[in-house]
Amino acid sequence: LDTSITLTSNLDIFPYKEVFEAILNEDHRIINLNTYGAYAYNILCEAYHRGLVYPEYVWFTPGGFTPQWWTEESNFSCPHWMVAKALNGSFGFIPHGYIV
Image 1 (cartoon, rainbow, N blue to C red):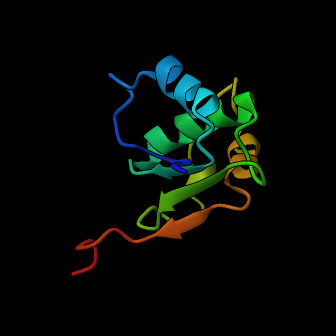
Image 2 (cartoon, rainbow, N blue to C red; image 1 turned 90 degrees about the horizontal axis):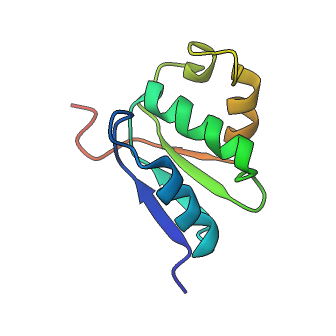
């Protein structure tokens, strides 16, 4: 049973509609978000709006972001508390080779 998906992209070419439809239609529950903070913010904002949050969905995020990175970005349609809600129950990781 494959219930995971990895998201690696940038906002200029990120196919939001297709990826979020795949997460829902293919019943992915574990999402590896392998991107930068600003991109992650927007992806998690969309996840919040679509209800892709804990406990039904678990997000893995890179641990190399600045502390409380989700409070550094904010916009009218997605204040940082929404991203914090999407991050609830998530796991952070440090990519291999990141720390030298």
